[in-house]
Length: 290
Image (cartoon, rainbow, N blue to C red; front, side, top):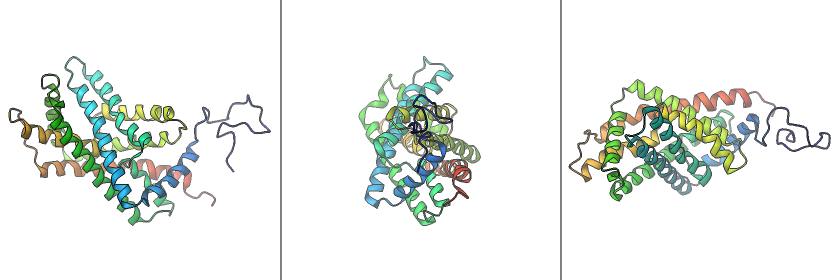
């Protein structure tokens, strides 16, 4: 039976005015979050394939919308460096908010399935199947959105400043050294999974939104690499010079796209699965009483 104090509900032995001893504001405690993430992880891993894939396609598009908003901010030459980074990160938060509140399957967030795997509730095959299907669906959703946005006329905003921003961003991402991209991916997904972890503490939409915004703002402002966002931003940099020959592209081909994604994906896995999921498993789940 759960402790009514943790859930913010007075018991018969506790005066209604007494404050909870540790976790207030009616939030779930970290111990409760770990239990919820394990239960949800099992459900996610065992979704029927068509539903899992479609939810993953949605997540890829949702993250793409966040990346679109980020690029609009980066295209504004009137903003200073810090303002661009922080405001860009804040609007990018839209992507994870849509994933968490509207419901979708995001590869980076699903690295938290490692908690259920470490507890023996999921097999290695189930985790890897989920990651493979969800990553594929995320790629379909992000690239499909890039095609629609490129054809919509959106990049022409600001007298072409938005298109120029996409080209700069794509060129910079594909020029990163392997180790830089890897460790940037590690830090990115540590913050993304912490945002998801804290969103599980909330009981309302506002709780979840508040938990998500700051970690996502920080990872974007710091320039860390998110594999699914890159599956929108880099294809945009590839598509725009094809659709408008007057734009000078960075010569990004498929091999360069894949080569830039591999270290980021691996880094995202380490950041989410090891630095967040495995650590919290050791703290809250390992060795607990059955």
